[in-house]
Length: 93
Image 1: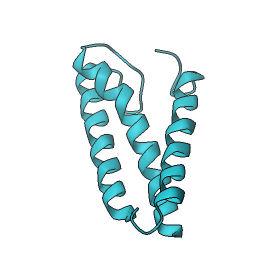
Image 2: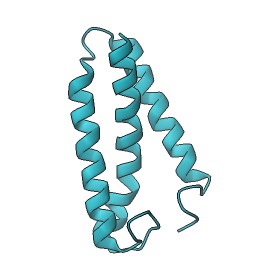
Image 3: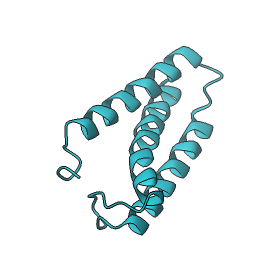
């Protein structure tokens, strides 16, 4: 159960962080991040983050603890969403 919670939480963080970067990349807009703020860099970072999140979900084995794992995913998504909404992700876009 601890594994499902930890991996689910990390998956939520990665998935929620990848979404804004991926979408900014595909609409050809700049968005600040560690590797630069260009659209191509954001597209690649978002795509990679979503891929890692999916792999973490697969490794989480949520079948053994679906409620706890699902709550951990939701918490990870919420915390990353608040991080982005507060403008703390390397300044405001």
